[in-house]
Amino acid sequence: MQVIWFPSAEGKDSRIVGRFVDIEDTYTDREGVKKTRVVTLLEHKAPASTDVSTSIVKPFNRDELIKRFPQAWELYLKNKAAAADAPPPIPTATEHNIKGMPIETLNFLGKDKIAYLKSMGFLVAEQLAGMSDTDCQNIGFGAKSWRKKAAEALAAPV
Image (cartoon, rainbow, N blue to C red; front, side, top):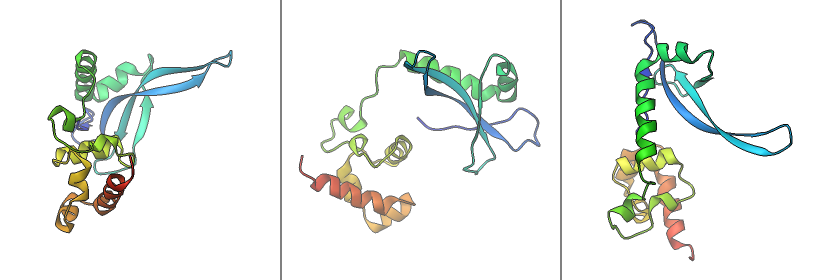
Protein backbone atom coordinates (compact mmCIF):
# COMPACT_ATOMS: atom_id res chain seq x y z
CA MET A 1 0.00 0.00 0.00
CA GLN A 2 1.25 3.44 -0.89
CA VAL A 3 1.96 5.84 1.96
CA ILE A 4 -0.04 9.06 1.64
CA TRP A 5 0.57 12.13 3.78
CA PHE A 6 -2.21 14.71 4.05
CA PRO A 7 -1.79 18.44 4.74
CA SER A 8 -3.01 19.85 8.02
CA ALA A 9 -6.38 21.59 8.00
CA GLU A 10 -4.93 24.39 10.14
CA GLY A 11 -4.78 26.75 7.19
CA LYS A 12 -2.83 27.25 4.02
CA ASP A 13 0.23 28.48 5.94
CA SER A 14 0.60 25.21 7.84
CA ARG A 15 3.60 23.26 6.64
CA ILE A 16 2.74 20.01 8.40
CA VAL A 17 1.53 16.77 6.83
CA GLY A 18 0.21 13.74 8.67
CA ARG A 19 -1.29 10.29 8.54
CA PHE A 20 -2.91 7.90 11.00
CA VAL A 21 -1.48 4.41 11.50
CA ASP A 22 -1.99 1.44 13.82
CA ILE A 23 0.96 -0.17 15.54
CA GLU A 24 1.19 -3.20 17.80
CA ASP A 25 2.40 -2.31 21.27
CA THR A 26 3.74 -5.04 23.54
CA TYR A 27 3.64 -4.41 27.26
CA THR A 28 3.79 -6.30 30.55
CA ASP A 29 0.76 -6.11 32.83
CA ARG A 30 0.85 -5.95 36.64
CA GLU A 31 1.00 -9.73 36.94
CA GLY A 32 4.05 -9.88 34.67
CA VAL A 33 2.17 -11.29 31.67
CA LYS A 34 3.22 -9.94 28.27
CA LYS A 35 0.31 -8.61 26.25
CA THR A 36 -0.14 -6.93 22.89
CA ARG A 37 -2.52 -4.12 21.98
CA VAL A 38 -3.14 -2.03 18.88
CA VAL A 39 -2.42 1.67 19.31
CA THR A 40 -3.48 4.34 16.81
CA LEU A 41 -0.89 7.04 16.13
CA LEU A 42 -0.86 10.30 14.22
CA GLU A 43 2.47 10.56 12.43
CA HIS A 44 3.27 14.13 11.40
CA LYS A 45 6.21 15.86 9.78
CA ALA A 46 7.29 18.69 7.52
CA PRO A 47 7.03 17.77 3.82
CA ALA A 48 10.19 16.09 2.44
CA SER A 49 11.53 15.56 5.96
CA THR A 50 12.51 12.18 7.34
CA ASP A 51 12.03 13.40 10.93
CA VAL A 52 8.60 12.04 11.87
CA SER A 53 6.88 12.91 15.15
CA THR A 54 4.05 10.86 16.59
CA SER A 55 1.05 11.53 18.79
CA ILE A 56 -0.87 8.68 20.39
CA VAL A 57 -4.59 8.98 19.67
CA LYS A 58 -6.33 8.85 23.07
CA PRO A 59 -9.88 9.74 24.12
CA PHE A 60 -8.87 13.22 25.36
CA ASN A 61 -7.08 14.28 22.13
CA ARG A 62 -8.84 12.20 19.49
CA ASP A 63 -11.25 14.89 18.27
CA GLU A 64 -8.52 17.53 18.14
CA LEU A 65 -6.21 15.30 16.06
CA ILE A 66 -9.01 14.33 13.69
CA LYS A 67 -9.89 18.01 13.29
CA ARG A 68 -6.25 18.78 12.39
CA PHE A 69 -6.06 16.00 9.76
CA PRO A 70 -9.62 15.13 8.62
CA GLN A 71 -8.56 13.72 5.23
CA ALA A 72 -5.95 11.49 6.84
CA TRP A 73 -8.57 10.19 9.30
CA GLU A 74 -11.03 9.40 6.48
CA LEU A 75 -8.37 7.41 4.61
CA TYR A 76 -7.34 5.64 7.83
CA LEU A 77 -10.94 4.53 8.48
CA LYS A 78 -11.40 3.48 4.84
CA ASN A 79 -8.18 1.43 4.85
CA LYS A 80 -9.03 -0.14 8.19
CA ALA A 81 -12.44 -1.25 6.90
CA ALA A 82 -10.90 -2.58 3.68
CA ALA A 83 -8.24 -4.50 5.62
CA ALA A 84 -10.91 -6.17 7.75
CA ASP A 85 -12.76 -7.33 4.62
CA ALA A 86 -9.69 -8.29 2.59
CA PRO A 87 -8.24 -11.80 2.45
CA PRO A 88 -4.67 -12.20 3.67
CA PRO A 89 -2.14 -10.80 1.18
CA ILE A 90 -0.69 -13.17 -1.38
CA PRO A 91 2.80 -12.56 -2.74
CA THR A 92 2.38 -10.91 -6.11
CA ALA A 93 4.75 -13.28 -7.90
CA THR A 94 2.73 -16.28 -6.70
CA GLU A 95 -0.57 -14.57 -7.40
CA HIS A 96 0.45 -13.94 -11.01
CA ASN A 97 2.07 -17.38 -11.35
CA ILE A 98 5.51 -15.91 -12.02
CA LYS A 99 8.30 -18.41 -11.49
CA GLY A 100 11.10 -17.47 -9.15
CA MET A 101 11.82 -16.50 -5.56
CA PRO A 102 9.26 -13.85 -4.50
CA ILE A 103 10.90 -10.69 -3.20
CA GLU A 104 8.80 -11.02 -0.03
CA THR A 105 11.10 -13.89 1.00
CA LEU A 106 14.25 -11.73 0.90
CA ASN A 107 15.12 -10.95 4.52
CA PHE A 108 17.16 -7.83 3.70
CA LEU A 109 14.16 -5.92 2.33
CA GLY A 110 11.63 -4.23 4.58
CA LYS A 111 7.94 -3.84 3.77
CA ASP A 112 8.45 -0.33 2.43
CA LYS A 113 11.26 -1.41 0.09
CA ILE A 114 9.24 -4.39 -1.12
CA ALA A 115 6.29 -2.10 -1.88
CA TYR A 116 8.61 0.32 -3.70
CA LEU A 117 10.19 -2.47 -5.78
CA LYS A 118 6.77 -3.91 -6.64
CA SER A 119 5.68 -0.47 -7.83
CA MET A 120 8.76 -0.49 -10.09
CA GLY A 121 7.79 -3.91 -11.50
CA PHE A 122 10.13 -6.20 -9.53
CA LEU A 123 8.36 -9.31 -8.25
CA VAL A 124 11.08 -11.97 -7.94
CA ALA A 125 14.68 -12.07 -6.72
CA GLU A 126 15.87 -13.11 -10.17
CA GLN A 127 14.76 -9.73 -11.51
CA LEU A 128 16.71 -7.93 -8.80
CA ALA A 129 19.82 -10.03 -9.33
CA GLY A 130 19.69 -9.38 -13.09
CA MET A 131 19.48 -5.58 -12.88
CA SER A 132 21.87 -3.59 -15.03
CA ASP A 133 23.84 -0.64 -13.66
CA THR A 134 21.39 1.67 -15.44
CA ASP A 135 18.46 -0.08 -13.70
CA CYS A 136 20.22 0.43 -10.37
CA GLN A 137 20.67 4.13 -11.07
CA ASN A 138 17.01 4.47 -12.03
CA ILE A 139 15.86 2.75 -8.84
CA GLY A 140 18.11 4.82 -6.62
CA PHE A 141 19.96 4.46 -3.37
CA GLY A 142 20.55 0.89 -2.24
CA ALA A 143 19.79 -0.80 -5.56
CA LYS A 144 23.32 -2.12 -6.16
CA SER A 145 23.36 -3.60 -2.67
CA TRP A 146 19.95 -5.22 -3.28
CA ARG A 147 21.22 -6.66 -6.58
CA LYS A 148 24.24 -8.21 -4.84
CA LYS A 149 22.21 -9.59 -1.91
CA ALA A 150 19.55 -11.01 -4.24
CA ALA A 151 22.25 -12.84 -6.23
CA GLU A 152 23.69 -14.20 -2.97
CA ALA A 153 20.24 -15.37 -1.82
CA LEU A 154 19.71 -17.17 -5.13
CA ALA A 155 23.13 -18.82 -4.93
CA ALA A 156 22.63 -19.98 -1.33
CA PRO A 157 21.78 -23.66 -0.86
CA VAL A 158 18.13 -24.30 -0.09
